Image 1: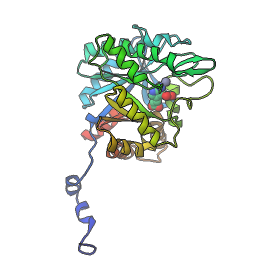
Image 2: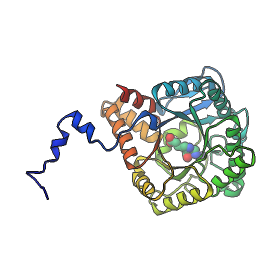
Image 3: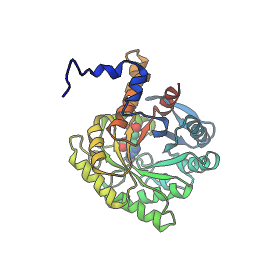
Image 4: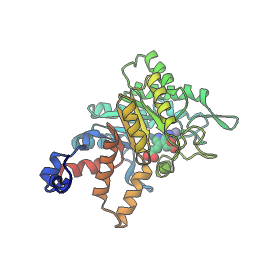
Length: 325
Ligand code: PBG
Ligand code: ZN
């Protein structure tokens, strides 16, 4: 067996040509999905204070983003909605005239090739900010399922190419699958936020989506950061309930979960490079402490290397541009 000095690992690192030839993982724009925050109105484009470079957009502006994504080689967008009105049941989440439903219809009309995925949850729409319905001071799983399924159905009816439940209620994938199949939408796939952790890295998003819980926290439904085997159980359950794509979220602090999921499951795997991961890089770059481009491309490569087929990231457009240069 060869060893130093006959064996020298540096030989294949000498030039960019050689490095490229032996590179094991290459991330590309085609791996990305770009998340968008939509609200009612026209020509609305307001920067989100906690997420520089991300905007609250009206549906017409969301179409422009979807078109730009296609030009950059990014296949699609993930839509989050901000309602005009919040209430205890999150009514606007499943309103056919909701901002997400409007945006989906417009995107499918003007940029039909763009994949329109919708985030399915109630927290942006409820006045208490939780992801389900409150009964006796706690999020009631089974009563939430009906509203979650209704929300997914209304997105699919508007034309969504895929629905992505992020609520972490037990049984939601099966409830959604049943609702879709029962209404002639058997073709619509479900991307399940299967292993979603109760994470501090959602902080900037909660300001962006105005979805912070008004009491308590999400630890009664999102996963405990210490648990890995439980994530595999969550994913196995979602597979059994009919999920088409499994997601791990957040990405960076959970690359081990992603790698384990890659070994265990043959479904496509998605990883969500969440708001906190994005805003930390932005803040450090703005302060001049980090090279944004290199940090972002390294991060996205690591997520892909760990096993992701699909990367949901706010860096998508920047990264796609850098990868083209
Ligand atoms: C809604 C939802 C959240 C995110 C995606 N869908 C927030 C949460 O669960 O509190 C987080 C996305 C991000 O931080 O970028 N349930
Ligand atoms: Zn939620």
